[in-house]
Length: 344
Image (tube, rainbow, N blue to C red; front, side, top):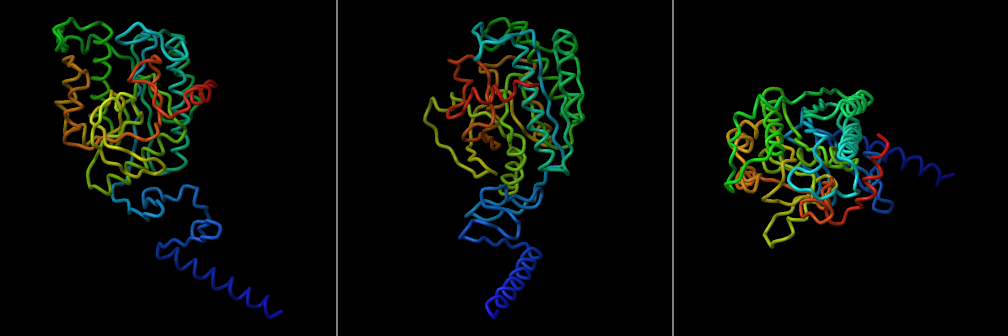
């Protein structure tokens, strides 16, 4: 009887202690079973508090000073161009539209999860489409309508931009029609970001398949690292294989559930802030008016002044051909992420 009374008394004081810790923002860890009573979670669960603190054991917590208010995804689609600069077949050997539909599906699924994890963030997805056939556009609209996410579709009018593009590139070659449409779509994306977007913007092409946690991880990581360094930054969700073709020094950051490393190069799929877009407007727009070599050279120049981070392992799969150094991310189950997005 005395033992039972002692247990009741002990449990009472334990509950009071836990409540006091919650009030003052402290966390308690039971090392015997890896349980955190202040959060009613286990250590292998997400311990972050959206917009307040990022928690990584044993490093402790980072108070979030750079809170994300909104995220706009600008999805550049074109289902009638199989490959922009080459004639090789893509991984899985499907029609281009299939990659567009699965890419969009992966984004929608990842956005829905992020919306639950970050209920106070305003999410929006904008599709800028060039010359996709009507049946493909209908499918894109259908996927967006079923998502219950704020969305819109904009048709790209090439004549609005083509006169601003220099017809000869940095290799003294004629700029292809496909490249001009790509440059025009990027131009439209940047204008939209400058005029309409309030906070973060994710610029993405229609051949990237995203992990379910991709958007949540990018938001949580942006908040954590931007709060740590006191600066805006770039995030690229793909761990490109070409980044491993030369030996370069880097720095490693801890994100929410991934390691993130500084990279000096990316393609034109990346997340950043409206502040960065405005700060480097002239450099970004230069990609849309003159074909550099490499095409993303103005971006790479910006990365000399700003942090650009890429996750290890990857959060997205770029569906190029199997031999491309710009495609298959290492240590990633490519077939799994492809099949997960089949039911769009």
